[in-house]
Image (tube, rainbow, N blue to C red):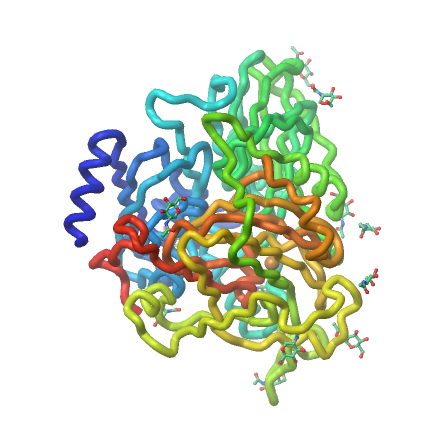
Length: 556
Ligand SMILES: *[C@@H]1O[C@H](CO)[C@@H](O)[C@H](O)[C@H]1NC(C)=O
Ligand SMILES: *[C@@H]1O[C@H](CO)[C@@H](O)[C@H](O)[C@H]1NC(C)=O
Ligand SMILES: *[C@@H]1O[C@H](CO)[C@@H](O)[C@H](O)[C@H]1NC(C)=O
Ligand SMILES: *[C@@H]1O[C@H](CO)[C@@H](O)[C@H](O)[C@H]1NC(C)=O
Ligand SMILES: *[C@@H]1O[C@H](CO)[C@@H](O)[C@H](O)[C@H]1NC(C)=O
Ligand SMILES: *[C@@H]1O[C@H](CO)[C@@H](O)[C@H](O)[C@H]1NC(C)=O
Ligand SMILES: *[C@@H]1O[C@H](CO)[C@@H](O)[C@H](O)[C@H]1NC(C)=O
Ligand SMILES: *[C@@H]1O[C@H](CO)[C@@H](O)[C@H](O)[C@H]1NC(C)=O
Ligand SMILES: *[C@@H]1O[C@H](CO)[C@@H](O)[C@H](O)[C@H]1NC(C)=O
Ligand SMILES: *[C@@H]1O[C@H](CO)[C@@H](O)[C@H](O)[C@H]1NC(C)=O
Ligand SMILES: *[C@@H]1O[C@H](CO)[C@@H](O)[C@H](O)[C@H]1NC(C)=O
Ligand SMILES: *[C@@H]1O[C@H](CO)[C@@H](O)[C@H](O)[C@H]1NC(C)=O
Ligand SMILES: [Cu+2]
């Protein structure tokens, strides 16, 4: 079976696509940021890690050697992994981690996805330093549905801690309190000029009159980021590897996990301009990183000693700007790139997403508010990772690892976005998963809650792109709100920002069997349990089931 599959696979790829073989070495690396040297984990000594260049239809073999001190896995963020879920990466969901000294080869094919995705570590907070961009060109012989750019520039946004991010997480887990906030944001690994330390970042050089494609990735662990370039408008042409109708704007917002591709025309005076990014959040001041990262765009011929022009970024909690941006995005919906939104739904659920507080164990020291432990949940279930992978338990029929009773509706109906009584604040712990029939047409409404602290949660579903058919503030109304859904050209993404004290509705067809991680893309919220798993059953057809696991799959 494995051999047969591999054979067909190779035959196919020889016929129309390339095979890319890469080696990722995870290792401790000394890097200097903010004028100090820190020992962090990188891939091949680089921060951000290597950019992968592929075409739609190509196959990748990436062998990961773990020469670092932490357990590791790599996730190919947004890659649909049709039938190849074993290569998806999240630790204890799809695979046991690659332990120090071990190796594993990820094999997968890019099917029907173009423009920009990315990759990152998917255990603990290793992602903070282990990530990189994935550039996906159209198939040979086809082209972008927009002006062919003169040049393309990957732009990876991230955070920087003056510490090992895995230790930041461990510290917060032990204490039950808020983790340390980052010390800086970064663009392509560098904080830029607005910190107490001169940056060694490289300027981007622009030729007057030319059009550039900026492939922007928000790789930050715990943040949504605003991004702006002084004096320039940008035209959004794709998000999360799905084409959009061109949308002209002077500001971008990217939630953790999201990618956005924009065209920039270098049509301004020959000068230097800052690209700048800072956090969007509604949590109280003092509890987040209030800094701004920059990089310089220099026009060829500009005065080398001139001061760059600064853009004016919105205030950190400017939800109105975020809402305008998000609601302006539409799928391209062209003949070549059609929209297939499920029009009728066979599997519908409403899932609350939010934080919580648990009482401290007797004799414990808990540094959450009033001696509590921070928690997070979906439909009041705070997910606890198993010590073997859910997919392995499912595939091999190992009992007792998970239960299939994830609730399809909030177990208690209350005013989710009002003043929530404290008796509702502590979630239960569990490993409840949702089972979905093959080919089901699925609708999920994510409803944000106001428990302890309302937030915009970026919800990510592995193995799928979904349509965001509607969103709103307050409580979702199942009678009224579906009337305003966009079922014609809604944006398609793999990560949706659920508005603070609001909701977002998504639809997709369950055409990819496997056990798929569903979670907030903020790593601190994942640590607290804002996650679950959607198990999509195999279909009856030969090409409708998960392939068998690779023989070198790591063991726990
Ligand atoms: C990192 O720096 C430390 C302290 O200077 C040094 O002992 C260590 O060998 C360096 N590690 C690497 C991988 O260069
Ligand atoms: C978190 O911040 C505190 C206070 O600044 C510091 O003492 C501690 O070392 C930090 N923890 C880590 C893991 O960096
Ligand atoms: C950017 O777009 C706005 C609105 O369309 C327009 O007013 C402004 O002049 C444009 N700026 C540049 C630099 O093109
Ligand atoms: C956050 O940064 C802005 C400037 O970007 C500044 O005006 C504001 O005072 C800062 N707030 C805090 C709490 O440091
Ligand atoms: C370049 O900028 C510097 C600093 O603003 C200025 O002193 C100098 O005259 C400028 N040179 C040219 C050729 O404009
Ligand atoms: C946004 O933050 C500012 C400054 O902290 C505050 O005055 C304002 O009330 C906040 N706006 C909202 C909508 O919370
Ligand atoms: C809690 O803190 C107190 C005072 O700092 C200390 O004596 C005690 O050992 C701690 N308990 C635990 C379980 O860490
Ligand atoms: C902490 O306790 C104080 C005093 O009882 C209360 O006013 C406050 O709301 C509590 N905070 C939280 C987050 O529970
Ligand atoms: C829920 O609470 C909000 C905020 O207090 C309030 O505006 C709204 O009317 C409440 N909704 C219901 C249905 O009670
Ligand atoms: C969650 O479940 C716990 C335990 O049954 C209960 O105390 C709490 O009120 C529930 N909260 C919600 C929002 O359902
Ligand atoms: C699933 O849907 C596809 C495309 O609509 C269809 O070709 C296939 O027959 C369906 N399979 C099942 C088992 O319903
Ligand atoms: C690494 O993974 C193995 C297998 O799941 C586990 O036994 C071990 O405790 C993990 N190590 C750390 C440091 O988490
Ligand atoms: Cu979250």
